[in-house]
Every structure is written in C-alpha cells, then in structure tokens.
Image (tube, rainbow, N blue to C red; front, side, top):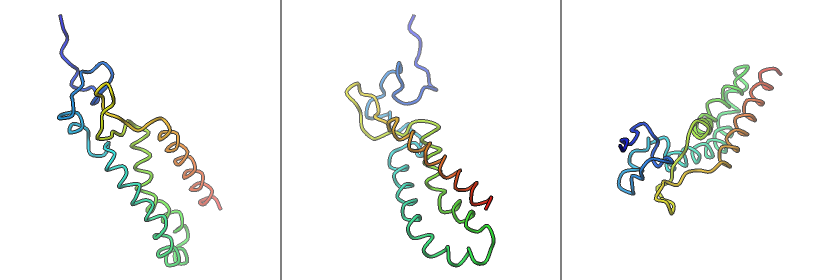
Length: 129
C-alpha cells in the first residue's frame, strides 16, 4: 500500500515527490527564499559602510558600551541571515536536473558559522575591555 506524502517534509526534500515549478517555491517561507536573504545581505553591507560613518562618532562618545550596542544594531541583518542559513536551507527559484529546488550550499553554512563566531568574539572582547 502506498503511503501518502509527508506534509511536513521541506519542499523538494529527498524522498518527497517533486512539487514542480508551480508549487515548490511558493510553499517556501519568505525568509528561506534567496531573494529575502540576498536583500538582507545587501542591507547589512550598506549598514556596514554607512552606519558607523554617521552614527559611531555621535554615540560612542556619549555612552560607554555604545560601540557594542551599535555593532549589535548594525549587524542585525547579517546575523539574521546567518541564523537562517544555519538553521535550515535557503532556496533559489530554480530547479536542478531532478526537478528539486536548488539551495544554498555547504559553503554558505561554513561562512555563516565563521561570521557568527567572529562576531561573538568581537562582542566578548569589546565588552571585556
């Protein structure tokens, strides 16, 4: 007897029937889509260059520990993408030869882990100094 497909399986998961171009990408949560993750990365890049230039001189002199807080606020989009990548897959709006959704590779997870580790290290060292 054939078992019904698992409704809790992620889109395009191994063993799950391919949903095809009409349904698979539409069923992916917005935060797991390549377009959302890429937009957050661009925002993080813009904040990384423009944010400290305008805000650091104002807040760092006024409040002790403002550098750490500023780093947390300006780094939030990048940290959000890292958490999303490390907790699951991010999907492209494209299909491979098996009609499965393409997704970000293991290299993205490695870079996200390195970014989180580096951010954590700088936060700890800035608070301790």
